[in-house]
Image 1 (cartoon, protein in one colour):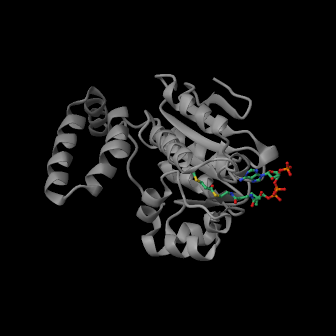
Image 2 (image 1 turned 180 degrees about the horizontal axis):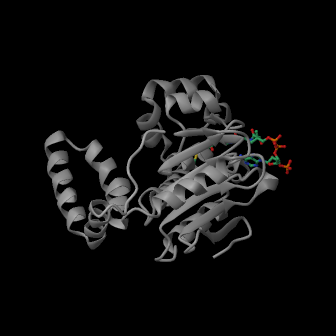
Length: 260
Ligand code: 1HE
């Protein structure tokens, strides 16, 4: 499943975690069409026994965003279809088969931030910075950022980032909700892998409810959300994994919930 600019490997005791790495360091992992389509193919073809994924970037930067060298000759209609193509790929990441944890470092900018925001959890190391430099390139977001980023940080902050080119450092990014974890330099991948291995131990149906159903409930009118929540609660309770997890707790075999 490997591609020259997109590496794939499996980790964990049961090889349950997929590690997907942007591997185009010479161009700071800029997202060429070829790389974006390789991501789509990879998410479409994840082995069925993978339970979680880590998305990482080779080199000092997670991702420099859209490959600007491919933008030169595109007209309006080409741009529209190109953006829709990006949407289809981000959709695979966000609504694909497994929770995806992004390991962020260095530049997480433009389309790189859009990609990170399609993931379910973001871990940033101290070198990480976040920016949307589209306005300085005379363009607009096109990879779903206009929908996903305001949901994380609010519309006003995104408007500011785009109008002024404001750059948030790692600490600020964590404070405003662009990352859920902040770790020392060079430790984002290890933390993301640790989280992925933990996530992979959850019942798959619960992970499905959390990543696929919960965000839709959150956007639905309350009345519909409550009913959908009840249905999902019923379905997850009836799964064999849930019965086994409950038994394990009641028989004293499961971990207790302790403070840190
Ligand atoms: C690129 C790209 C790219 C680097 N497209 N080639 N994104 C941006 O506006 C960010 C543009 N990139 C940068 O600001 C910097 O490259 C970085 C801060 C990320 C890294 O700096 P640095 O000094 O480590 O590397 P560099 O020397 O700038 O770049 C190394 C090479 O990568 C160089 O090519 P070379 O042939 O001269 O070696 C760069 O040209 C190339 N490179 N970034 C193409 N982005 C769906 S819509 C999304 C819209 C957007 O994403 S807009 C934001 C675009």
